[in-house]
Length: 400
Image (cartoon, rainbow, N blue to C red; front, side, top):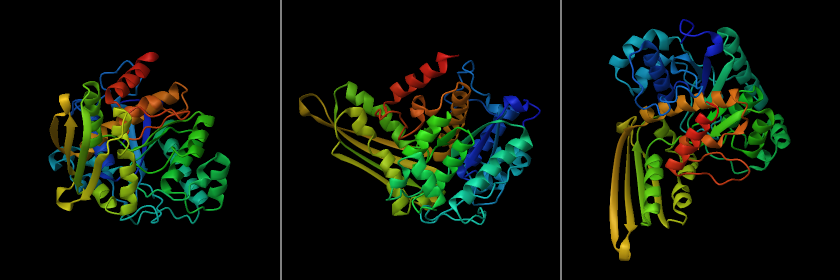
């Protein structure tokens, strides 16, 4: 997409997405194009009311990125079927102009996921150099200097050996040694940080949140945020749990199950990737309530017929006055990418603003967007939705 008619290069940002051909990313691209054309309102965009905070306008964002599938974004959006063809037909020319760059892949981390559009490198350093060349090439072609990288790739398994992640020096030596514990997500995060570009991780995969990369981001003054976008079931938990806590209702158990049939669901059909996902969902209740919910069960099931229309079902057992037992049931039928896409856009806008404000390292004020927010100095993450919202609003208004 080319927004030169609407804004000069200095006023635009490039949103470079890992997994740009996926359901979420193609929905991001389609949504931004509808906004540019004036054919969409701002429903679902949580920061649309903060026009005076210095956030980049929505129609000043240009999309590019990496994907294992070489299909352009018009074909990708049609394939994923998140939006009806009637909403995509007017966007075809614009979206067809975005063709993914070759992506890096390691099947030891990315299960049930593959593609032909691969970076032709046989080392970690070779992949990083290609990623950095892609970033520089985009900036040179478009004239856009303000860039943000957001990871929307499929969920990776977590490595067992994390010793190489302890310091910048050890991590960079591990890159030279082609250490098997370094995943593709870490390569993208490292490349972005070394290029001085803000990085957001919308996935549960390990990225800039490993100690080495968090330290490097702080040292270089690069804003980073993540991980695992908070879109559906966990959003509901972080809204309801504070109410139970403040009304002194005891949560005896919380049973959660999800069914989804998109590519993310297929990736999560592998036990290693599923374990990474469940790790970011598990501690939210205990942190908010202040005690361990002994019977907190989380399940995710791949169910192909559902496609991107995810169903999240919760059964909550609570105890009230005089020990009397009660139940609450929540059935959330949602479009996963429709919930995620606006958050990706807002993450990019906030990271760009943080960079312009000179804020490097982990951006705690952005915890609202994530299941497992990054923090600094071992500060416990805040999961209470309402406190997270206030933290972000305070930050937005601080220098507005």
